[in-house]
Length: 205
Length: 205
DNA sequence: ACAACGTTTGGACAACTGTCAAGACAGGTC
DNA sequence: GACCTGTCTTGACAGTTGTCCAAACGTTGT
Image (cartoon, rainbow over all chains, first blue to last red; front, top):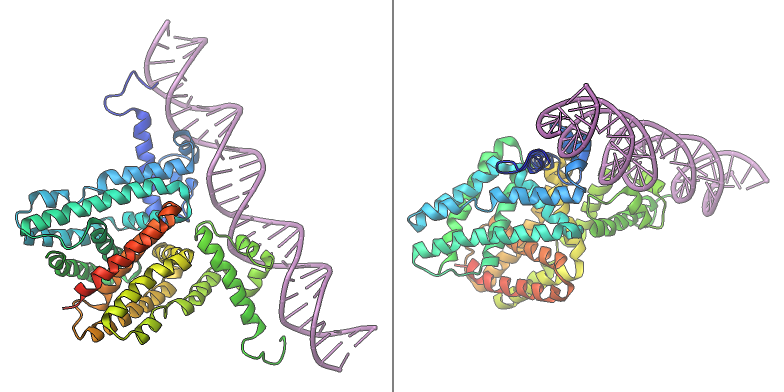
């Protein structure tokens, strides 16, 4: 043991998080298919042996990364939900934040869709992907229910449908943002914001 | 040259199509990340050397495959558009066909989303992916405009938004279909049909 | 029969992959 | 000082990958 018991997290866990962070940036840049354990180590302060010292398996590293990433992402809109005082405010702030998170964390979202797709081919990823997908749906549902509450009306759709629709618009924008010319990036984000802004009222009845 | 000029397509092109078909089934089963040229050859009547005889590159094979696949997929709903005589008929047939194509061609759709995601990391795929994505959007737009025409009303959204929303619902269902238990497959498809059926009227104003 | 050519095979190559193990390097305890 | 123990480096392994190439094959024309 490194000491008796570390203040908050053992050094072991700290290093695992550190490696997970290096792995996430690598995966976000190269994608799942082209990311190797050696490449991850190259993007970290360590050599490739360390990866196997802290993770038994490539699969264990990946799933650990997904769960690590989740901690910071599935509550992304909760502050907006908590502090908005009108339906109009919630709507516009949510629409803006959707675009903002693409601008600020684009590669991480690219990675999410990549891993989500991989789960269709790799059974080992399914558990963690479905777990996070459910949390993302719940995150959107919190936005929508609060939105209806503030508007004093009822929602015209269920949780799953709302998540599927908004996620489709989000993924579409992310694709255009990631593959389009750099000069058009601001435009596609503005389109997403306007689109969600226009769509949300029609989700109420 | 094998002959002077073959009846319809040269043997060279025939073999390219044949290899593309083997490649597509392999890619649909294993996904982009785990598909190698040797694996493709193993799923074909030939050995791995032939692949490089007909395709200079792995990238050329993949892009050829995507275009080959496109020929059969971007007109999938045109027959429904052409023969439906009422908005209600078009709506229910379209909703049913969406689910039906997942049932019948699931792996091919998984592959499409896989390659679409890869294009965010691999610039070489962007051109062909964006080309087909545009054709898919146009395909959906033909459905929606005809739907509005039959209903005698106006559409409440533009082409891109309609495609993004419906594609989101489609991808969501595909994920559940591909990763969920076999016993639930019919259910998720029925949910998609019901969902699209309920959604479409709200796209009109 | 021969030659020519398009096609196919199978093996080779270097580079890379995940995995593992032996040793070096700490820091602390006796 | 010696000793231990957790950490890290380095090199090795077997397997796979994309790519290339020399040889064999089969058909065609002469």
